[in-house]
Amino acid sequence: MEKVNNTEKKSRFHKLMESEFFYHYRRNASAIIGSIIILLAILIAVFGRGLAPQNPYDLTQLDIANGYLPPMWMEGGSAQFPLGTDVQGRCILSSIIYGSASSLVIGVVGMLLSCILGTTLGLLSGYSDGFLGNLIMRIADVQLSFPSMFIALVVLAIMGQGVDKLLIALVLCGWVTYARTVRGVTLSVKKMDYISACKTIGLPKFLIVLRHVMPNVITSVVVLATIQTGNFILTEATLSFLGVGVPVTQPSLGLLVKNGFDVLFSGLWWASVLPGLYIMLLVFGINLLGDFLRDELNPRLK
Image (tube, rainbow, N blue to C red; front, side, top):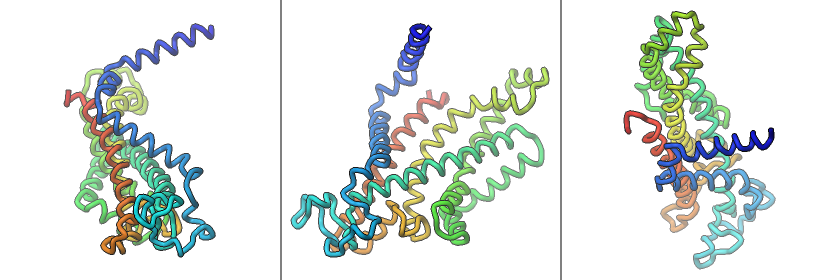
């Protein structure tokens, strides 16, 4: 029996790897590069702290005499601090490693919460006729008339700083995109004959939505989720740069850029530019994979 099960698992794996999706994936250099960047960022976030030269948020490990040391390849640099230090003698490489974990967690958790809320409201609005569906879309229309960054700033100005408050702000900014997209797909699917047949036999609305509408929604949601993760990482960095995101006592790539920006034009470029480049590289990798998923999972683009 075990051999049979193993054979079945292997055949399923081979079928998956030989599918059209993986056929195109293996031949898409951008998707592979994006996947490698994302994988490396995840490995750095998960295991990097154990390899970091120091804990940049442990005050006992900081020495102000090491402030603004240049990267190790420049004159005056030290192998102890490969990417240099900031004003407090904090290792830039260690700060990026710690900040990467924070940014990834905020981006992924914010995306998941936005996805759950927006998809639920989109399904509810698209499948239910009447006042509730129209109310959800009118709220979405009103919110879309304001820039997302403005909404996040207002929420954080009212609630204050903190990772939990930042996540609430991101969710309030991000749910609308899911809701509108899912509603459009749902309105299209519910006109299909098989949905009418399900209603005729008396299948409950909940099961119709779960079994027959959701599979048609998933592909659009996956594409949106991938792209929005990168957007949320950028939003978190921007809000932290403005001083309203993650508190200064917690790691953040945006805070690193902000702290180094004050001396950017004094020749001490590494304190701001290197964390900024890491943010750019991370979001670039996510967008590369997101573009592939958009092209591959959207039947209208084929």
